[in-house]
Length: 52
Image (cartoon, rainbow, N blue to C red; front, side, top):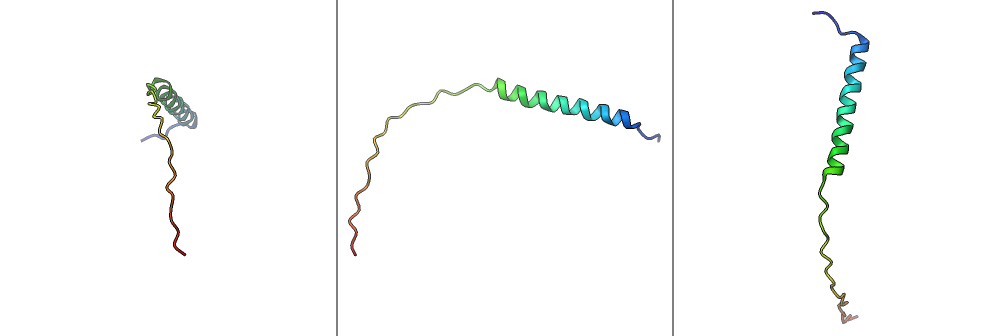
């Protein structure tokens, strides 16, 4: 079985790197943003009775 030439390995690396980067970019931009439900919740601090 003949060995692959070094340039062919470089071509494969560049090809799969470009495919991977395009996959990541497509996942980033094709994600549908969800609307945040703004819940207005008043923060009421719990008053603790410290027994020393």
